[in-house]
Amino acid sequence: MKLKILAVGAKAPKWVQAGFEAFAKRMPTSLKIELVEISPSKHARDPHRFISQEGVRILAKVKDQDWVVALDERGKAYNSEDLAQRIEAWQMQGSDVVFTIGGSDGLADDVKERANEMMALSALTLPHHLVKVLLAETLYRAWTISTGHPYHRA
Image 1 (tube, one colour):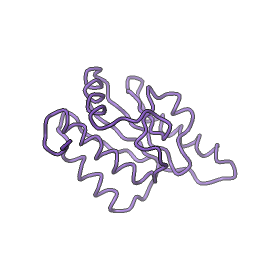
Image 2 (cartoon, helix red, strand yellow):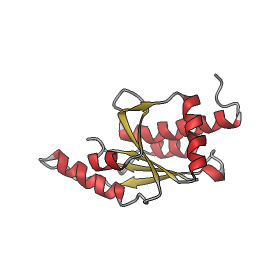
Image 3 (spheres, one colour):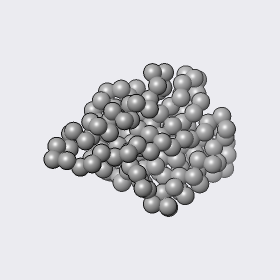
């Protein structure tokens, strides 16, 4: 199974790429994390229009058999142990898991509708570049819990 992150946003600061890679490279080959950056739309008078355009670009990268998790502050919040169990369940399903991160104006409704579930990393609205790093660390932590690795000390 592959964990794929589809994130709207380009030209991330170097610390974002370094932070993401620091956790992604620690994952086992059987559970690799791949980051795919989706170019943001140019801002226009109608924000719904460019959010929709970003949604089209996100959905173009999603396969029919993918299990899609939309990141949204109104989604289900997991603690680290629960997320570890969720990853184990996803592995049993056999599909790749695709996490979607919207741009600065949020995630398109079409993407949320396609999602199999919605997950919140926080009740706060977080900068989309920061979410890439936070999600990679969160997935790594969940994997370490499920394998008994000492990274996570409860």
